[in-house]
Image 1 (cartoon, rainbow, N blue to C red):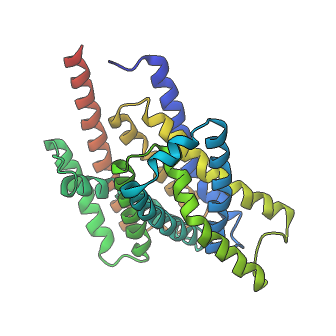
Image 2 (image 1 turned 180 degrees about the vertical axis):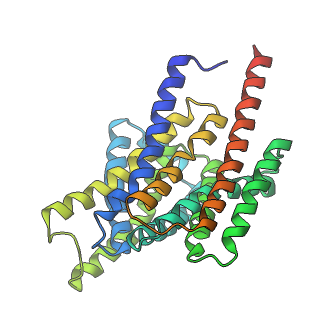
Image 3 (image 1 turned 90 degrees about the horizontal axis):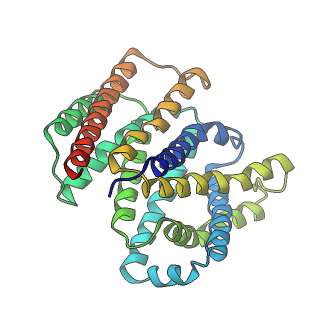
Length: 298
């Protein structure tokens, strides 16, 4: 059954909004520049859990949560929680230390990681133009790796988020329940971090009303785009989601240049140009294949 126009428009609004929020996230994190990254991650966990727990309660999905979060699924979510916490920690550190450019490169590389994991783990096959797109983007990655600085940021972000996406794909649980379990599993560590900061007098919370509001808001800016993305994924074709995913790193790239004034070398323009070209080819081929499939179904 084809997705109707109204559903598609809603999906595009939700998906586009989620990726725009992720793209603008460095601007928000810069407001928390005085807070050590572990504390920022801890506050994201605490306030995100409160938000998603309230949604689970008022939508009466507690029973579904209990039924899904057990056995193999619980083990997978424990792994995904570890991966996303590392991803958040590195990402926040990168923004606070003026490495937004490397962070954006990491999220441009993530689709390549997804393709590689799909081939190796899920035994997926690539079409001809998809192989061309991966080859073009891979050349950019190789050039970036030769003599690059702080590329550990890019590769750590790409690897952790790629593996996170794979685990969430195979885990038998919905997005809201999965996020709830992940943050619940991370809660003891988050409370330990905040407790240690409080006892040593290094805690950021409680010193400034404005800063406290921003720390509490970190929960909303963490959970909201994840939930919007989950809603969009149910309304859009996978190829369309693939096209939207380049919005966030593109916004981050522009922020790095024009807002944070990070130096951009000629080599970096070449690298991003090759990766953008590869992404464009991949998106074009995915849309072409989707239209062909829709035409055949009709």
